Image (cartoon, rainbow, N blue to C red; front, side, top):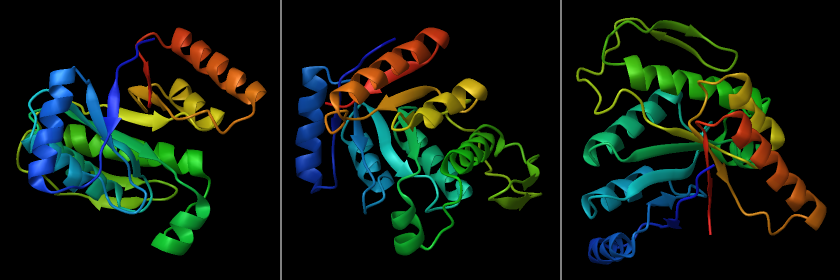
Length: 220
């Protein structure tokens, strides 16, 4: 199990972003997360990419259901190209009210829905340049990608996809389907009762031991 230091950023004027990214790199910070509460994270991270050379750039997290898997995949590919291969795609479900009332999208069974989105996003990222995707017939997304082709090979064969460790089913999801995610993003436990905090830590440690190739990243 590995730990790295990340910081959280939001949109800001270009001069301030440049100064902050320079400071983070001087301090040895591993990467920056741009969360999506209301504002999409991709533009903020693109600005951070232009102002840095080493920092990893993570959507921490981007809402998985409020945009199509196609748009999510293409946005991640753009960010990875702008940053020369430093993008990290964090995806999460958020809550039913936020999805259905504010974004007008189907929430459904969140873990199953998230798993489907991750699978489609990964396929488009890895094979979208080949033009052989065809039809995707999921429970939540039915896509006809016959003839679709991004037109250029991605910077990397794959972009890391992180899932939030807020619910045990979310962490268990990639264990059941190993291609689902590259790492677990462990959020704050401070609001949980002591017994549940200890339970979460023990459960994350068990998952890490079971999947030695998976990293767990905590926010400060």
